[in-house]
Structures are given as structure tokens and as C-alpha cells.
View 1 (cartoon, helix red, strand yellow):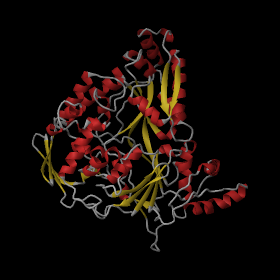
View 2 (cartoon, helix red, strand yellow):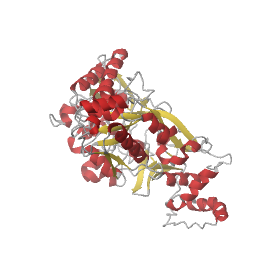
View 3 (cartoon, one colour):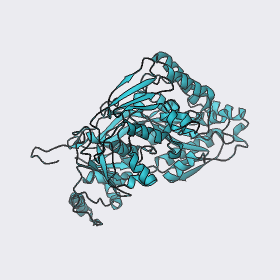
View 4 (cartoon, one colour):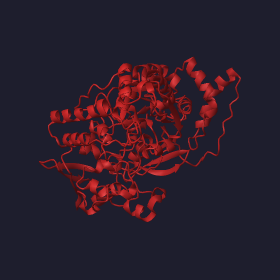
Length: 570
């Protein structure tokens, strides 16, 4: 494929950051051959450290650069996009997302019946379900997995997705026992689920990894170390061969999966790469077939690379924003939060830093969200920002305490989060005459600080779990584990609850819009900056089975390497 001079310059600048790729037969030799003419012309000598490639290990059919190292592969506790992709391949739920549309479709359940009041779901499981290790998989396994995710001992950040179950929230908060939760096994192949109220997106909830089915007997035997069991029983299209930290995750086709032809590849390798230049070099050299995420494109090349046919951009349901710790002075005051929001020139940030990687946002729910029209939101208004800050007791920034803006490292070349933080720091100084310090944390420490409300203002993002406004708006509910602002608003909670009880889509839309007005115009525990534009890169002449959709879900079992005319893999 043609590569421009500027791309080659960046490629050369980052050669020395290439990691070894064990088990990728010929990968480093191909890299050496591909670079030799270029290096000879520039007079550079490249030494590749092989580090003991395992020659007996079969080559992967597909190699994917997957982003940061996963925190876990436990469906009940994972939250990051990189780990959610792997978990979805290993542990299937009752439904799953269609790779073309992102809509829900049957998975472990082949069908379901919904009662007239839309409160009771009867799921009919497939009768040919087995664990990857051969044991029968039944409705009792589904029930166990859901109750485990709800169990407060598990400490699942996504447990709230199962609060729609009757007594789900009560069990999670310790106010009742597991037997009271609305999940009942009728027989080995039927599960009856009772909800607290009609929830039009409940089938979508059943696609989420937190509802993935996990092996009870292994967890009870090994406890927190159950993922180290070998072999590890899985319910998805793939089984785990191994997970080598800072090296790769290797998946193997699950021969006992109910859909025997589902997985198109025998072996898939997922590489934990968090540096954009490294990811780009692996792809350019042929050592990787696919790179997910725009954060793994060198930011200085984004505009140019988006013109190439193997770089694919698409709109999806993702929002970049910053949140306030509303438990801290003076951020407890909505006027202060509004002033800080109105002082930020989002359009300038988009044009200078984000460029073609985002769309200006004044509300939280992205364009394309199904059956919804978001409110207008607040616009840049320096004069109003000054007025509100003065009204809150800080005229021209006088006596305003020194606060911190906390952010983590990003992978897109120079730190995108830091660039945005610097711009906002300057805007807050120029418009409001206040000093905001910048606090840069390593990612794990950053997310821990957010969870513990150990911050003043913090950069954030959210990717929709399904195509419904609820997947965005409910995270700021008072008891939601992903709220992380300390903000509680009874009116907001009531509107969400009312909306999600509604069967009439027009009434529901109005209630949700009213709730979002509280969120982004009145109370502002968070401030939206821009909506994501998705980018991934792969050669459509070599790889098939990836489809752009609004929820940015690309099931691994659909992806395959195309076969050349000679019969071999391209």
C-alpha cells in the first residue's frame, strides 16, 4: 500500500519502540525484509531482539492490536473497551450484538416470550449448549452468573445493569438475599426473569459482558484465581489458551460452542499495545492485521491516514467529557460548575487538537441515539461565565481556591488528554482569572482516584453499551457505580425511572430529554466536549467480517483472513 513521505518519517522515528511478537511466525523476519531497503537508503542499522520465539506454537490466523493491557477477563468486573472485547469472545450471554447493525440477536437463548405487562421474560435456551470443556451448560449457570455479578462481594461496577431485575438492587445493597431476585430456573433450558418495571432495552442488557455466563464449579474451587484454571471452561466462541501479561492473549476456537461454524479462525492473538507509534509500526510491518481505536493512530498523522483506504472512520455512540467532584468546595455550587463549563471554547479545542477525530458536543447523548432528540445544551459564553462565578462569591476569580484537573495518559502520540487540559487551563485563567493545576496520573491510579472521588475535575469518556439514551443518562443516577461525581438528584432519578417505565416512545423521549436538561444545562455534574469519531485500520483485501456500527462492536468470531486465489492465506 502507498505510504507518504511524512508517514515514513514518523515510521522511522519510532522504529526503536517495536516490541517482540512471540509466536507470530515470520513476523520479525517479514519486518526486517520490509524495512531493509528503506534502512539501507538512510544508513540506519536495525537490530531486532527476538527474545525466544516459540517455534512449536501455531501461527495465529489473525493478530489484533487491542489497546491497553486488560485489568481482568472476569465478565462481572471488566469495564474497559479492550478487555470487554476479549471477554465477549470467551463468555456469551443470552443475547449478543449483531456485527452489522449492533442490534441484539439470539445467542445462548434461541427465543424468548415477553408477558403482556412486559415485566416477565421467559428465555428458551438452546438444548445443545456445552462449556468449552464439554460439560452441559444450563439455565442454572445463567442464574448463577447473574447473581454473582449482583453479589456485593463481587464489587461489579456494572452490577447496576441488573438492577432492572426484581430485587436486584436490594440484593446488591445487602437488603435481601439471592433467593428474592427475579431470576428463576423453570427447567434446564428455561429461565424466567421478572423485572421491577417495563424496560424497553432489557434484551440489549442481556448482550452486555456483565451478563456473560461463567463456570460456577471453577469459581467455587479457585475463588479469585479462577481465571488461571487450566483448561478454563468458557461459554463463548473462543477459549483462552493463555494470557501473558505485556505480551499477548491467545484465543483458540471453541469446538464445543453451540454455533460450530461461528469462529472463523482457529487462533487469534490480541496484543496489549498502548502506544500509537508502536501499533502503527506493527501494522505497517505486517506483524498485526487489525488495529482498533483512533487512540492507536499517531495523532500527527490522523488527518492524512484517514484518507487511506485501509483506515476506516465511522460515527459511533461515544462521548468525551469532564466531570466534577460535586462533594468538594466550591464545586458543590452548580453556579461554579456552570461558570467553568461556559468558559470553555469547545470549538477551539476541536479545531486545534481533536481535529477530524471528533464532533462538537453540547449534550451528552450522541447523534444517532435511537428514538431520542437531545436538548440544546450550553454554549461558550465568557460574559455569562464571569457573571455566574461572581454570583457564587468569586468576582473576577477573587478568593477562588486552587483546584486540580486530573487526567491520565493517552496513547495517541503526544498526550491528547494533556493537550486538552492545557487549553482549558488557559481558558479558565483568561476568562475567569482562576488557576487550575494539572494532575497527570498513570491510568490505573487515575481510575482508582475517580472511583474514590480523589479529584476536583477529571477528564472522562463513555461508550454506549447499546443504542438507547438510557445507556448514557443512567450512569449519573444517584446509585450508579459509574457516576463517580458524588452528585445525587432525586428529580433526575425520578425522570429516568418514569421514562424507563414508559411503553409510549414519545412520552419516554420527553422524560429523558427533561432529565438530560438537568444534567447538561442546570446541574452540570459533567460537561460534554465532543463526540467520538471511530477509527480502526485493516486492509479489506486481506481481512473481512468487520462492519462499522453505532455501538462500535466488532465480534472477533466474525473476523477472518481472506483466502488468496492459490488457496493460501493472504
